[in-house]
Length: 291
Ligand code: SF4
Ligand code: SF4
Image 1 (cartoon, rainbow, N blue to C red):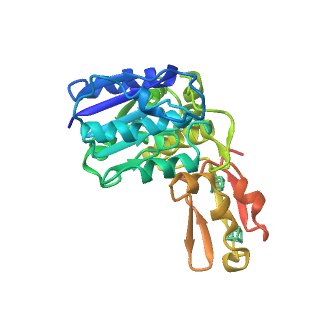
Image 2: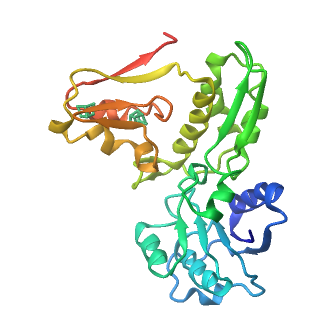
């Protein structure tokens, strides 16, 4: 696989440095795109870099506004088959811009992970080869009651999972989920604290839910879960909990629908309480096992 990377700003640089650790041999071309360009650009062709090299996959990180359209011209020139365009801020890519990019691509698979650490395999050879190592965090925690070691199977593209893993040793299993969120902030996670209107939450929060998901998957428990009781009447409310859940909008099964009833999967749930507050039948109960 041959990879071209387009990057911009601090976040772009951080991702580039992280993915070079694994893909240095496969990254054939790296191009820095200027920061702080105008949001609306009439003609992006002047920003198409010189010295492009034929590649299978384009990874675009940290670009804001119309400059994102430059991937379409680049993909044609280098015969790219697949593209990953991340968002860590709501200001990067509007849904209109995404549609414009998709309309301008022929026979090219494009994915738009938001945040980048929500990327998972999608059935595309090149995207999946990348997503084997980078994307939605996957870790394995060992120990009896305290963390003895944490192995990273899939790192966040910014490198945060490795940092979190290196700083969890010694914590009680009970504390690890909460602490993983703290460590992510200490790294620091550079995702935006502005509300993303598509997701209904901040991208920073969603990145926090992703690292906690990795912890819960490994430990197979959580101190905080939401339970749906028998008051649930999904057909009457139109499954409000499902529709409001930011994790569902990000692409994970935090709320599962079973006939007329909703269930909340604690592994993916970020415990944001949006569904609990939206439920018209008081059918969602918060359970805190530490109290
Ligand atoms: S839990 Fe509440 S919001 Fe969700 S489907 Fe049931 S009644 Fe509707
Ligand atoms: S608390 Fe409800 S809305 Fe929030 S992440 Fe969990 S299931 Fe989704």
